[in-house]
Image (spheres, rainbow, N blue to C red):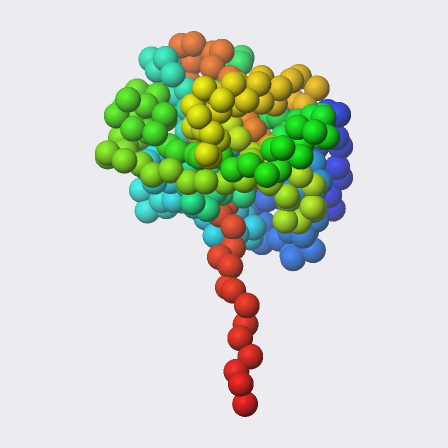
Length: 288
Ligand code: SIN
C-alpha cells in the first residue's frame, strides 16, 4: 500500500474514513502528521483492511504519545498496553456498552484510543461516536458561558468499584475490582482542544459523578440534561466494523458507545490508548 491518504467524511458532525495507508508499516513522520491532522479535524477516523499484530498496533499507537496501561483491565501477557476487549457468546454484558470518554476517571485522561477488530459477530457489534464539540456548539451562548466556568468530578467508582458495572461481570475479560476508594479527579466541563482550539463538552454518563461545588440535586439536573443533549443523533456517526478495521478517536472531544446487539456471538477487539505527552515544564534560564 502506498502512504497516500485519501479522506472521506462519513457523517455531518464527525468521522472520516482514511485509505491508502498500511498501519503495520514504519510510517514516515509526514504520514503520522497527516493522520494526526485528520484525527483532530474529524475527531474519529477509520481505516479498513488492516492486518496488525499486537506489536504493530503498539508501535502505531506510540507514534501519537505514550501508551496507557489500564488500571483495572489487564492487558495482554507481555504487552500490558494492549487491552483485549472480548465478549464471549455466553457473556451478557459488553465492555464500553454505554456512552463514555475513555479514562476520564484518571488525573490525566487519555487523549486517544485505537481499536482494531480481530473477530466480529456475523451481525451487530457496531460502535457509535458522538461529537462533544458539536454538542457544545449547539448550546445557547448563555449555557456555554456558564459551563465554561465549571469543573466536574470524575471517578471510576461506578464501573470498577465492588458495586460497579464492570467488576467481575464480563467472563471473557480480566477486569479487576478496584479496591476501596478509586479516587476522584476534577476536569473542566468544557475542554479547549490543545491542537485546534475548538471547545468541547467534557462530561460523560459513565465516569462524571457531579459538578464541583454544586448540591447533588442541582448537579444531577444539569448533568442529566447534558447527557441527553450530548447524544442527539445529529452529533453522531456509526461505524460498522469488518475484520481488520481500525477506529482511532479523540477522547478530548468524542464519546463512544459499543452496541451490545449480538447475543450468543463472539466479538474480539484490541485497544491501545494514547496518553498525553508528559509536560516538561518551562525550561529555566540559569542566571549568569
Ligand atoms: C471501548 O469502549 O473502548 C470499546 C468500544 C468497542 O468495543 O466498540
